[in-house]
Amino acid sequence: LVRVVADILLVNASALAALAIRFLYLVAFEPPPVDITFNDLFWAIVRNYLHVAWLLTAICILVFALSGFYTRGRAYQGRYKALVVTQAVSLSYLLFGFIAYFLGGALDMPRAALVLAWGVSAAALVLSRVWALLWSNVVRAEIGLERPATTEVSAASAAGAAPPAAATATG
Image (spheres, helix red, strand yellow):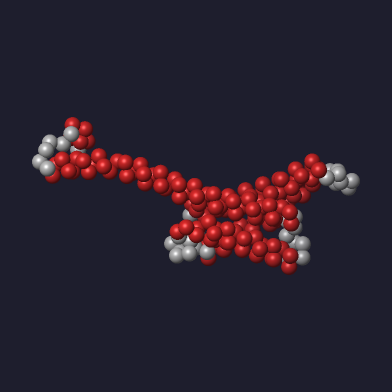
């Protein structure tokens, strides 16, 4: 459940970041529109995001689950994890773009923002998996550092020697 929530947050944060970057690009580099203010444009982008976020999230979670993100799928384990994540994110955004195209403008997400959201999502999800792997290695290393001390105590006890004072104090 934690992984699903984290993926939902990453996908939606990526979509929001892409829309924000597109809005900032429009403000900085495009001539101001005559018929609409930037404030109205901003709120139109926010409304568009709220209309597309639910479908994008549902598609991503469905594709991620079918790709084995939340189970012990054979394809998802090992050194190809980043490739599987990138493939699932790409498939999710392609499905979303396909559905948005055939709904005839009911889901209005700018194409540049969609491509940017795909790239940010892929990078964020791959980096989150890499971070989780690195963090689990750090935790395993810390657990591994504590084991030799208990092995020392066991070896000393097996040899008939008295355990160290720290070992007797803890148990």
